[in-house]
Image 1 (cartoon, rainbow, N blue to C red):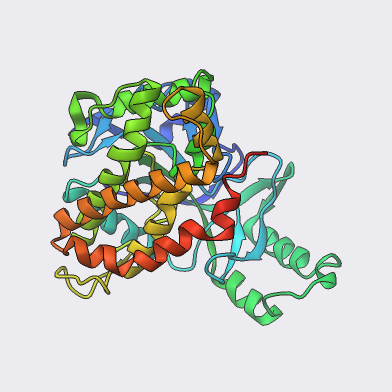
Image 2 (tube, rainbow, N blue to C red):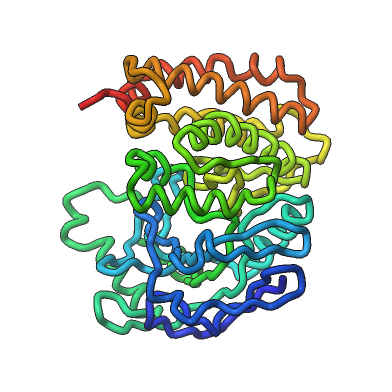
Length: 387
């Protein structure tokens, strides 16, 4: 699928118009967005930059030429209503970034991302695929229409403003100037396999009778229809528990090993970037492996982050779900979460081993201390205290 780049796009509306995109329901068959998609868009509570529509998500199923399924539209680079972009130090990786905006310093990055997406999808692995990239020339910020140069000037002024003088700044004026001179802001429209990320899930399913939980069950049923990816999903509390604790870790292990088999590692496989259906999206950090015949050390970055992510799925909200639906008897929150996490990690390792050829015992031995440390840490235990 070719990437269309729109130059000098004046961003006024916070969402795209239906003329922006062409999708594919089945290989080679164009599909146009329903007219009312923009009346029902949602912004992820955790990501603040994802677009989802009740008309699209879980109700429309596309496939690319490789048979990969897509059920959602996602938007990156759109400032949520009532929010303003600002400069900050990335809390995880330390570099300067513009919060809420999709920023690149080199246009070739977009073509590189699409190339990686095509390589991954050609291996039968669903991931994001960009449809339109809009280079922004103007934006509406707080009801005011600004050129990008005016926006950059405001970003710098606010970063070095009076409020900032009360704290130690992470970047010098020279560093900020270099960043703002190089950075370009884009709005990216893409289709993704599934809208919800792992980070979004535990709170949604806490109340299985809520409209959000029912919508999630419906969307999972749509995605996995006809035993897609070997999953027979049953939209019941018991079915979701089986999926969440057994099928999902197995999907993740198989997917990550095959992702590495394409010659890339993801770099940031956190709960923000794993979908609830066990795929990786947000490929900006993906880098080539030295060889497709990779070793455990070559992919340690991805494995260690995923190992730390899986226990995060079994939070207090998930415990409440299990007890309220009579799936598990109530024990201490930490005991329940720890037991499920250990079993799920073993399932993940087994699936990764089978798909990669790396011996299971090597994986278990390599991450034994990391798992034990993660499951006994104060921060992990704190997540499961019943208030």
